[in-house]
Length: 80
Image 1 (tube, rainbow, N blue to C red):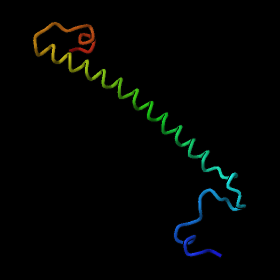
Image 2 (image 1 turned 90 degrees about the vertical axis):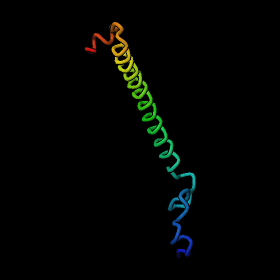
Image 3 (image 1 turned 120 degrees about the horizontal axis):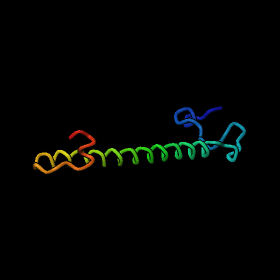
Image 4 (image 1 turned 135 degrees about the horizontal axis):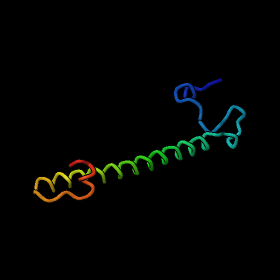
């Protein structure tokens, strides 16, 4: 028979149907989700760093052109 608390809040997540808290796999799933999230964060950080470096170089090309200086190798390759 379910109590009011069990009906409102559900059963505790660590206790499975057989009542053995050691047979639960929710901790393993949480670790897997954590690993996936960390890999996504690493990929995002690397791509944002690369994108930021490229944007900085593009702005430097524009700055050099506005000051009337000669374009460097990167600017010439980009057509600026």
